[in-house]
Image (cartoon, rainbow, N blue to C red):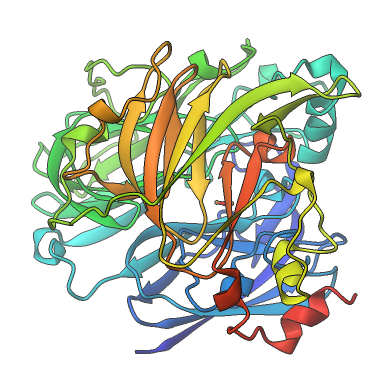
Length: 504
Ligand code: C2O
């Protein structure tokens, strides 16, 4: 096993992903950030240099961080921020494989470009011989205003909790924009180039699709090309053929696509589900396109292929009850059931915030929870939303969503079995759950007015956030944290560098 080293310099930069120039963030001057690739078993070392005028922290989304919970990167929970013009090294073993990503977990920074793909290859991947090449596809929503301004508006009484509506969407950091929708005086060029993916006829591609949005659910498809789902967030599944793939914020899938159609060009489509938005926009084109171009196709014409028409319920996940794990698993019985009720309510300043069991999370960036554990502080303020779990317990999270929006909930440091999901108007029901062959993942959407039951094994000492991954909702407090195995945490020794982060 190797040590894979990546140097990541976080800067501010003027870029125009969709032709609209704005100041944003970049990693090594790139947006999206560099592709990080490891093999299962490798050690990954990320040397982060913070070249910004503000603090940051980098989270490797989906990495278990077993034995290194201090490298999980959630500022205020697992670390203090990396100060401006300072470096910090994250180093951990990757004993897992699949499709992941990394992003800033400080403020709302990832919305403005601190993102990238993280792929863990498995030399024993059961599908290895069934595709020729891999393609990484990052899809996301995009704003032309800076996130600090948008966040301040969102967290004011005037917003009534209505999230900012994106200006555009991107595929691998590209799209075009019709500049007539841009404010006067903007530096904006219409018809910026779309992302272009090359196919060679006869080859098969494993596409790894990652939704790095702030807020938006997309439905992903390629005209005329069915997709076989083979992986959900690190879990290999049996092949399952679909045409249109709904994918919520922070979710990932691998699909196998055969380049077995006539040589030519085809649209790749990433349709933003505006039906889930609180407010609609006149200038937003919700259909984000890229071009799939077979080698040997001629001319500069755009594709003239047409979209799949299969219907898909809006704003909810792909129905994973049809997906079967590649390998049979035994699902342990639950020791605990944790019931969590999600609501949005105005706080004492009349700002609408997200609540879990009537408590809205308030970030304590100077004194992260993991440091509290090391300082033997085991009683936490109510607004820290901490739930402590002992060793090797099997935990069911029963989540009731009393809100009118759907929420993609993500658990750090673990995967959970998705035992059951219920739509609006139903209540959690153990008679309808699947404990025989559910899939595991790390981000699942609880429908508006509905519920989900997920099960995880607390086998990884640390402080692990459980939060809605819509970044606006992280900032409005829809966050809690599990402190798992506090005694075992203390047997693990963080490096001095980590303690020093909290001294500056
Ligand atoms: Cu993508 Cu709290 O993480």
